[in-house]
Every structure is written in C-alpha cells, then in structure tokens.
Image 1 (cartoon, helix red, strand yellow):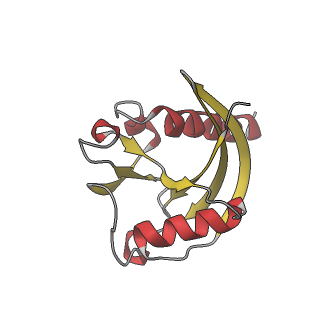
Image 2 (spheres, helix red, strand yellow; image 1 turned 90 degrees about the vertical axis):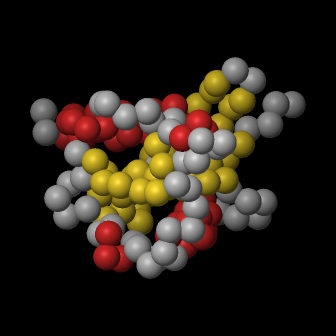
Length: 135
C-alpha cells in the first residue's frame, strides 16, 4: 500500500494583501520559496500540526482558518496537503527559526519567484478561488 504523506501549509497575508513566503536554504529545496508549514506528525490533527509548525518556524501563534485540502503527486511521492489561511504582520514574528529568510510579495511578484511546486499549487488554487468569489 502506497504511503501518503500529510502536510500542512498556511497562506499568510498582511494588511496590504501581500503574501508571506519562506526562503529555503540552497541545500534544502534548492533555495526555493515556500509557504510556512510542514509535516503532520503521527497522532496529530492538521489543526494541531499547523499551530506547532508555525510556532516552531516563527515563534508566533496567529489565528488560522482551514481553507481546503489537495492531493499532490510528484514522481513516486504523493501528499495530502491541508491548506490554512491567516493574517500576519512582520511585527508579530518574534524569531525566524528555519530557512534562509522570509519576505512579503504582491500577487504580481509571485509570478517571478521560484516557488516550490506544492506551495505554488496551493497558492494558485487559493488565488483562483478568490477570483471566482468575485465573478
């Protein structure tokens, strides 16, 4: 039976509508940009995992809401990803504990970034859903 890895990501936006992304190190995900989050640990619910991951990475506890889930496949790897949404301002971040840095980007700026495929897929679905709300 094939193992499906469970992941959690949060799409954070600030009061200006910009997206917060994490820059990975060159030795991990080749320095691409990603959403904040990580793996669901055994015995955890996705809501517990996202809170733990965000605290581990940023030492903050923002309010986050579950949005949707998606299944992502790349080669032999299959992942079930739970996507959350939250608002976060730079001043709320106490400490950056993982990765090579972070930055806020406008929707237009996202198009020119090297974003890891799972994060890109989640952002694209998120943006499509937001556009559909206004049709």
